Amino acid sequence: SRSVENMELAVADQKFTSGQSIEVPVYLTNNVDVAGFQFTFNFDPQMFSLEAINSPLAGVTDNNFGFTKLSEGMIAVSYNQAQVIELNEGANVLVVTLKARMDGSLSNMLTIGSDIARAEAYDGDFNVMNVSLNVVNRGLNEVVLHQNTPNPFKSTTTIGFELPQPSDVVITV
Image 1 (cartoon, rainbow, N blue to C red):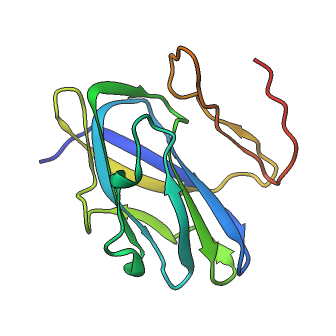
Image 2 (image 1 turned 180 degrees about the horizontal axis):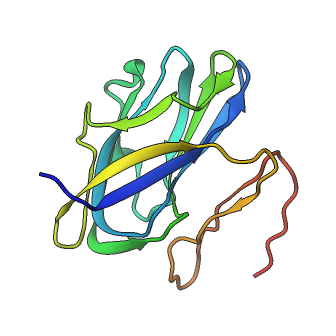
Image 3 (image 1 turned 60 degrees about the horizontal axis):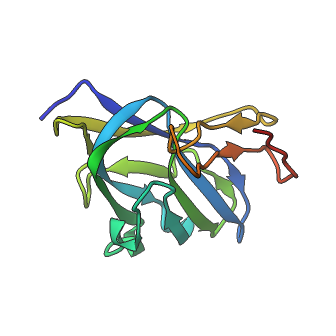
């Protein structure tokens, strides 16, 4: 099936050195209401080894990830909820921690495909949406503040942000 709707994911390009652990937040670049999504997260296994993968989304456990083709640089990702959830632009969907085997940058090293799980998302009526991933080049000194998730929230929320280099941060609410 084809859809004009798209769940657009992005990661910020990062440079890294051999032996470095790289935390790669995967975030939305558009607003989307979803009942679920699935895709295959691909990385170059010559360039990286996987240290961790998780998600700040409610209800995500290790059962949401498939590692049968990890040696080939493929991780199946599958997520669904009983009720539609509203995800806003900037919402963090996934965090992948990789260990670099050599120096480089993330551009052209990470993709989303349908090798294990077909890359698609589902709205409240179970209409199929495409899922895409872009590696975004940002300015070297740019600080990025993401939308809190969930939004709205009752007792707790997560506020994601990206810094050009490790530093202390104060967030005032």
